[in-house]
Image (cartoon, rainbow, N blue to C red; front, side, top):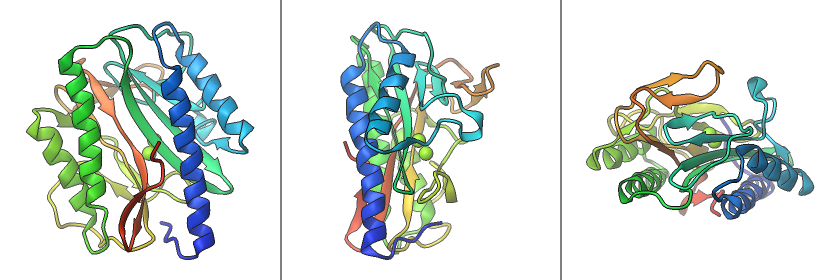
Length: 248
Ligand code: MG
Ligand code: MG
């Protein structure tokens, strides 16, 4: 687990977050009916490498692309390819960027063309749940205060959080300690300290929180076929409260 200490270290972590956020903004602009997930992957890879970054996901445990693209009932880890998104879909994109030795990690879900109000509500509630969790990322709180806030918000809307996949510490590696679950009682786990950096990332399903993995061994989908949304930010815990490093 990283504890940011020097101003130089904090600046480098911020720079990685900034390039991640810029790439997210580019992807959001490009998403429209007819674009393929492979097009989005190529766009992200070119954007990141042109600015001196490295797409962290590419080759990570054998993952074949620079971003994860997960559509509709796909939760996380979808592999980009020839599939076109169409009006009525939702697409989740997860992206990691290594820059000057530090890593930013972020995810978002957006509607493609026209989607139902019910679906838009899932996206809003999931993003709100992320921000409820971030608000708990404060010096002196305990780690599980984050997950408790996330789950409480998702449940209040009648949705379920995914328990199989969780957030994580992040720094010079994408996945560092501690694990950051999106559920559980408050007041448990380590005290949060100034300088910790966490990737907080609720995955929220409209139906049950159960998931399964498709035969490609990567794509995680909801077990009941219900829609799923995913939002993530890399967040530094500072003396002045949480600082979102990947805000786009
Ligand atoms: Mg991520
Ligand atoms: Mg992550």
